[in-house]
Image 1 (cartoon, helix red, strand yellow):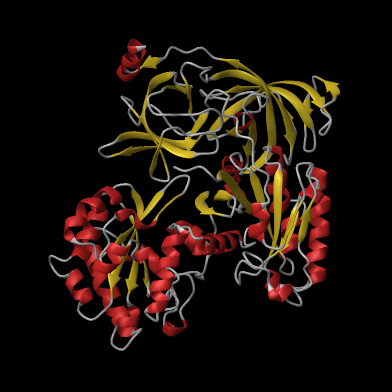
Image 2 (cartoon, helix red, strand yellow):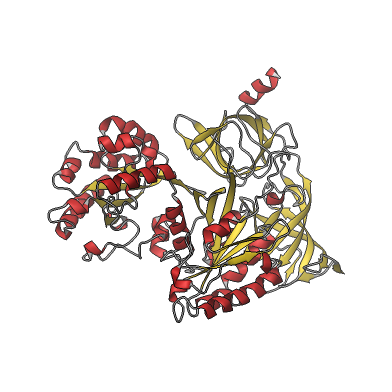
Length: 625
């Protein structure tokens, strides 16, 4: 894969309902989550055909050959990855000879979007005894895809166009059929759409006023809030990973959830980010709720800083809902208050771009907004170079390129392990330090399991090597999916391989614990992708939060606001590293009572020696050498 552009990872954080997903979704859509040439070509063709508004039509037909034949050849036409899922769209008009592709696609999907055509005669052909609508739905269910969304497409070509009766007839018939297969129609969203005109794809269609929706408001957040549970609650649960390009960078957006009980996900997401985009809502009362003492704006910003995300951009969202709309005074009030707070944490406000935006209407996202003529743009001053601009996209482009520690030994925390038919075991995660390439021997800690890497992939392309910052899947030999799991760390067997920790010393800052923390306390730690209980076995000293200077030896307890050096003992095998050697594996959050009660940085680690296992593949490689 050509790497002229650097790959950066961005985490989107902020109070729930500040519009993170909406803003992020709009940005991705506008920045083309599919390559620009394809979209431009399609836009041109659509314009020539007099179909100016193409919006999401490319979701249904990607390649020219497919558009000419009017069929979908390759199942991977709309696949997005999150940290946990591959979501694959199953396009119902798939021709029979491509069903093999569909099976390989479906077998790794967690949710199927079944597209049925509402056109006269088209639906009937698909649902007939040998039709593919039936076959695809049955395949999806048989292959274990238990969540289903049905898009009733081509509503523009019903008789009359956008016919409510036709939609209801199709919904009824598909419901009957999917119920026979094993789906519960009550859990399935049926959405009348036109993939060509974009009706109900991202925005509610005016042409189908009769459609009262299935749940929630559409628009851009739909891009990120994909799964049923999230759509019902209208919040982002998992950390969604989305890719797009700016003029300078390949950007991966990590959309971190706003709701308190999902802070664990946010920590594992933040620890891999190069820059945090903090979205705060400007709406009356909304900003105040987020910045209040227990608000999420504060907690997220503090977490991002403590976890080593040193670059910050603030998007002041929902400017369209201030009093009066697009109020300069409200923006300046928020900028002042957020600046004061982030300065206390450790950010320098002079290095932070504040951008007034509307994620819903798109103001100042990619282009300067005519609604905020008073905004003369943002400026940042940094020793590595100053920057200025107006839009959120320009602020992303002004991020300083992160230094990637390629010369360090490999550390790759696993986010997930997939078993993929015909390929085998595929661990997935982000390279934090070092490089990984096919043919090398890796050791998975804490299990001390050594094997050979067969292949490495990113965004469905094979790599000759992956470097820090790359989110990759890699295929390993002779390892079952049961032997390795999320939280394990892969390293180079021949160069300082990772080991499980017996105990470690850390500097911990207590954020909000209702009582006192003393020796013996054993909360859950989230460190890189691991989620394991650790015991505070000894409180060595209390220190000053900012300077780290000792205040008191061997305190009996610590409470909110305190910082201390402590000895911690993992209650199950766990891999951690000193922050000074491997930063992403050396910072953690302490979770208790469904909230983050403390954050910490690891000073030193005592390793635990365990007997290991070397696979046949690894033995062969070692003999060759």
